[in-house]
Image 1: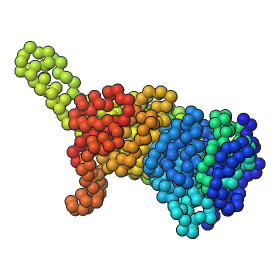
Image 2: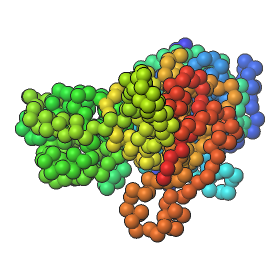
Image 3: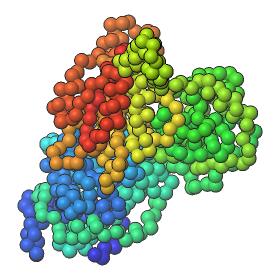
Image 4: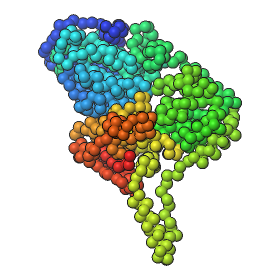
Length: 627
């Protein structure tokens, strides 16, 4: 099918009183009934516009659509269902918009391509804000298509109507309040169809980080009049299946609406990275370490290897592997002979798990180079230099690296269970053999603590698996104790909230296990993070179940606060009431209600068995922990 060229570039208005618009205004006259097109189709402008927009996204590579049902959004939802029937997309239905938003976030995290979220008007749209903020701060592509009432119904008391345009302005890479569609299109060559196809291209490019921007959320607000749905146009499948023509060059005028980052200076073009530059040359001399924060990836390990630098890699960095890994880095950064002598730091990703790293990056006497990535720029000392890439200029300081590696080996923690006493078990002396047997029984019956829990998850996961950590106390235990291993790790550390943790892990599993790819996604989180997102346990019948193990370290409340300053100033009653927030939920009953396989394990042997047994669906694994 030949695509029509866009005939005119629509304007975009960005003033607060008149939110972003991407197509010219049209008549306000409503049309309550579907029209019969010349070919006999019961057509509706809402459906044909939805078809043009979604087909434009799918033809450019979007493969996942997450729908929360609603009346005003029915045209978008029904077109998505048509695309699923044609085998062109994976459709995921979630009744909770917050769950839908974080499911799409997980898909974007894993695949690098945005998933589309479709929802109706009103509070449904507001429920997408937590996922949009996490996507903004973490640099994850996300496309939000929110249905709306037409402009004449805003601000006049109409049902389920609020001012949706601008709701995501502080986070969106691009936002647009579309004109109300007023055309049906039997042949796929109408001006409205061409404009929406061009908008789809622009929206996808913005979500993926077009030009100097980085990936993030895009908000398209889609006002629709009745009739809210009609028969899908005949060109839908062919247009969605055919690769899009190259898009026309886009001017860089001041009509662009969107945000990169929110910082002390607000949001604006000053936050946009400059054009790509040559790799920054790391001259020899300054005592240097590499710090890898959330989503740093393998590039951090590669630089440490090439330069002979110590590597401080958070457990959520995806860079905790290789010979330069520093074990027990918190204590070593506090050591005046090691951390106190650091002169230069190269940072990848966004470090958030330790105060020791934060204090290091705030030091005025340390040169900090932050490699630009998908997340928020690092500049904690006010003089950090942002660079696109770095390269090593010469041989590293072997003596400096050796000091760190010796201290690292001394700080490493061996979490392996004690090896069986083979000689004792084989002994013919009764008391020796009995002693060895008793020792084995004690190991098998030993209760699981936090160290054993994180070790079991780490050992069970391999490169074809995915491991996600919730923002709970348990991730800091993992960061402090676990050794090096090349595993794909995820976490929502953009804002480090507990919102949507299960939904994000579900999206990661859905994206990583497509096309019959192997692997299990494992999520480790605390009980409060689990309960906060328990609505994500609900999956509709008929949708493929991801291979997902949700492991809950249940210590009955928010024990993360026990290690913070508040524990030293709050009284016991107040501390328990408003910080620890004890809970007594029956997780087994929740698993039964939502159709999950349930396991409650109290020993390391049982935990290892359930983690490594073949799984074909969803498992909830509860591990009781002492406070």
